[in-house]
Length: 314
Image (cartoon, rainbow, N blue to C red; front, top):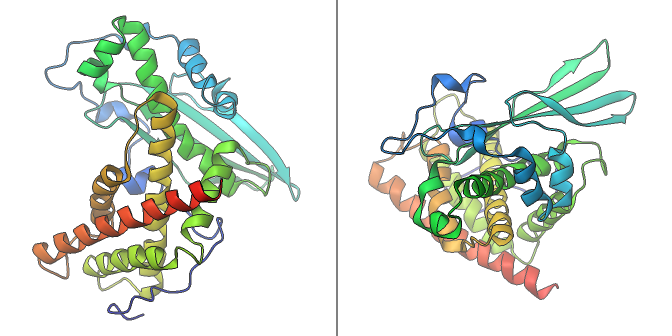
């Protein structure tokens, strides 16, 4: 594959062949015992987080997504794993465990950690574990304070909003990894439509432009050990990650009345994607930053084109 070619490689419309990035890819590996790295935001008054009611949070989510409520219905927010789904396929049982923990840890709203699957050969069982960390550090923001004077209601609303976003990632992963048909929810089906639209023939120029910019950034951050196949897979992973975040952010924004436009999403996540490609090992920092800006512009064009196609197809 030539780095100066816009043909980034064959496209795949398969939702199973293009795994998206997990939270470890996006934010760095988070240890199971996160208390080691968590710290209370400086200048923020102390608050005992135990004042929120789990059922209050779940009720807020239930009003916005019954599928998501069913996922969380039996999960306590105590950091322990609870089994949320089991399906049998070809004599094997696939199970998913979910843990949710609410705590302050700097200025990252939430994290979903996707550990590697655990295969129990004797029991013919495959277990996947998700850990969602919810950080309501924005509790004292002016807009939230003016909307909810009662701090318990404000805390429950904020936790529900963050958890809603993170659970979208979980539900998309369920739809991708469970046997066909077993993980389908409204959310997973909607995201599948986003993928199909982005990878459609009509949007091929916009898709190729984003992948070309990602390819250049991956080349800029490559090491001697990287081969073209590995680099191309990285392009596809980051590409789907960007689509995943666009959908998750805008789905959450629509549900909770906090809309975010394509320009803002592209600005934030193009920079994150550029960092995840490996940095500027092979070029000057200025060249790398220029390519990251080109990625941002290409993303806005792609995101706008996706929205246009989805709206015209209604």
